Length: 124
Image (cartoon, rainbow, N blue to C red):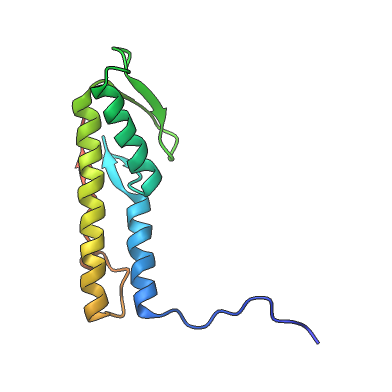
């Protein structure tokens, strides 16, 4: 007789809402029109870059990195890092607030954009 290795029942409404919030946070904000994640790791990295600028650890050449979508980005100032970091944090907070509100009303279409904040846009 075959064994059941994994069993998944219907997903609860609250779990669907939470997963949608995490999906949107991972998708993130837009920096110069390019998707820029707002998940824990990305927000932490930008926070570290911000602190490195403040501490004078990054020179005039700036901090260069590649986004998850494969776009090269160079930050040249503490202001640029701060603007991205603040946008990530605001967007995350807005997604979490929407998630909490949706958990109260539990609509059938939790993935509808009308329930969620628009991604923040940062132009550098």
